[in-house]
Image (tube, rainbow, N blue to C red):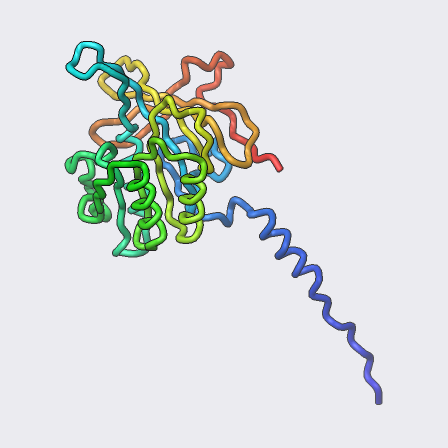
Length: 260
């Protein structure tokens, strides 16, 4: 008795689906660091992609009365510390480290103190690299070491080739890299996944406020978006406040959509 022949399995649909998934890079499956700043619902991946370089333009100041008059800048330390702590708290490896490259971005030890979770200070490594070449070498080495969960560095004077090198290193290890730049380097070409501008904002109370602008996000053709953040000194948490510059009446910007 000859049985009915069964149709051979057809693996093509499953293979095509897998190929489409890999090409599409579904945001839900990408490793993401939630910022905890209240802006995640408006970001393409609901946070910052790990294995990427993210640039933060700092605050500019000038000194015309001092012994060395000139142009100065300071990194957005409060935000960088917050993001570094968020990365450390989500690490599944007790040996994970935060690496701070460049004395200009080193936070005060008291700022790194955390009431819960991993102790950011004891998990931090501080590298005193001065020249752009030294900082590039130190950041690249830290990212490729696979011991760093996040690398926070002074990215001043790093060119396109340098940031591309750091982007490749971050992709290889999955670590996230935060580069602080002076605001006058806004037009410098970079391979970073996102570029942000941080500025101080007036506050009606003692709470500190900043405006945070997303100037560029790879994969998105949206115009610059701006949020106003307020930090509670006691809890060290951030909250969105109504954006006074937004004349549409919305307190927060519309979500950014990925294109392509």
